[in-house]
Length: 107
Image (cartoon, rainbow, N blue to C red; front, top):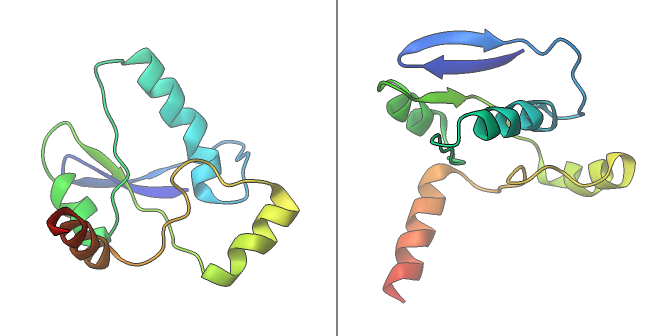
């Protein structure tokens, strides 16, 4: 089950028959199907529990709390299971990413 926050209410998204080895692999087909059925909807990949909680406390927003993984697990996973789904690999925390993006903008 994957914890989520929808308009300030917490819940668990239960996957009947998980297809992947990491949570995002199992969640990805549901997101694709939802976007296909609701083309006016958008989704973004954000990082950090505080950011997810802040954004998804507002109406019409849902966020999934996906666990991180260790850098040394990446290559082993790819060798054993193939490529990760889109946006799965992201290193660092949300604040580091924000500062990096701000610095890139200045340069």
